[in-house]
Amino acid sequence: MAFFALLLLLFGYSFAQEPEAEAPSQPQPQQTQILSPQEIPQGFAAQLKAAQQAQQQEATAEPLKTEKKTETASQNGYHSYEAYLDSIELTARLLLPARLALDSMKYVINSQFGTEKNKQIKIENLEKQHAIKEKKMMDKLKSTIKLSQDIQPEWGVLLQKNENDINEYKKRMDVFKGKISDMNVMSARINSLLAKLQVDSSYIETLEKKNMLYVKRMERACELMQDYAFKEEAQVLSTERKKFPMTLGEYNENKGELQVNIKDFSSNIPFDYHGVIKMKQRQVETIDNETDGFTAIIDYINYPFVVDGVKMYPGAKKAHIYYEDDELTTIGAFKAIEGFDWREGYSQWATTVDSLLTGKLKYRNLDSSYAMKKVKVGPPFWTPKRIFRATAFVLSAASLGLGYWQNTQVKSKTQKANELYGETLKLAMEGKDASGHKDKAKLYDDEVKSLEKSQFARNGLYISAGAFGVAGIVSFFF
Image (cartoon, rainbow, N blue to C red):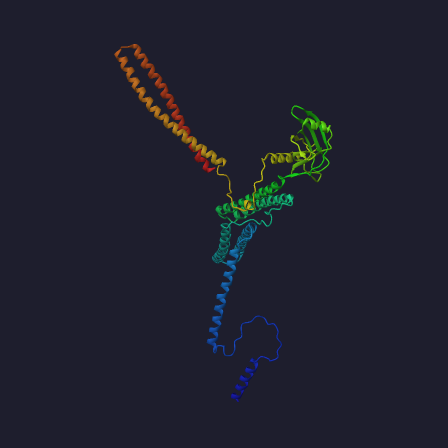
């Protein structure tokens, strides 16, 4: 019976393993690969060994995936400096709550029942766990701050040249100025977080220099936009050749010059030209003060002045006056348009136009690299403190040098005074040549006075050298 029962069990197991022939195909969740009966390891030991090998393969494959992801992230880096700064702030903000939570958990442990020794053990274990986690995050924060990669701001299309609309450059300048303002706020906020985390000052200074570079780039981007705009605004445009309102004045026969005034206030290119045109007397007599045959072209700067929302171009540069088909030689100037001078912004506009006309303001032919390249930032080397310190040490050295020179003079004059004293004393003891004795005595007195002056100057210079030196040293501590 037992034999038949075993046969039935084996037959049932084989039947259960056979798949249904007509089973519909349905999507199945991803499973471990099913082995054929020949591939199934026989025995528990063999199955255990196969399972261990499968686990080892999975464990090997997983680090490779992780390493590949890490390598990709490392290659990609931060897409912009703004994202880089956000990551630093996020890490700093995650560290602070962890410290607060540690203090709270320590307080809870201390408030529980139990021996002080057990409480101390729990707190030490808690502090060790926290220190391990915090070290990882702090190392990440510091390595991010020390990152040597030069990360560009998120420029987008902001540095591209767009010659169709000058106002677009001015809008971008406002964007850059806004970014500078935002950076100043964000920099102060992150510095405060780093100070609370007691991060070493060298890391804060490193990040501050990077932030200063960001601000510098925004300022240079503003210069770039200004240069783009200047290229368009500095262009000299011309009106069409046509007849403008014109009056003729007196004719100077000696110079062959005819006074002329051309003005037009009816268009968005207003001008008022006063000057003279070169014409022969016979031709002037033929004209008979009539202006029918005169036409003109006015050159003007493409720098508008907005009046009640309308762009006006009062920056006239040159008048080309024609009589019939011949251009005449003209000498003259444009007067300011009445009614513009009292309007807001006109004085600034006039100053800019004057700079464009005279060439003081020139197009620098800048491109996007001007804003993107890395430049040296930081406070100037010659700060007021360093200037004071350098001045103090220079004056100290100069006083010391002059004092040493005066000291040599003291030695020389002392020796000479001693010699004169000996000669005077010898003449006095001999009692001869009274006039010679007086002369020697006078020379001795003069030398002694000169010696005293040199001693006074030497002592004063030594004192000033010491005072200036001390001042320079003290400046290191303030």
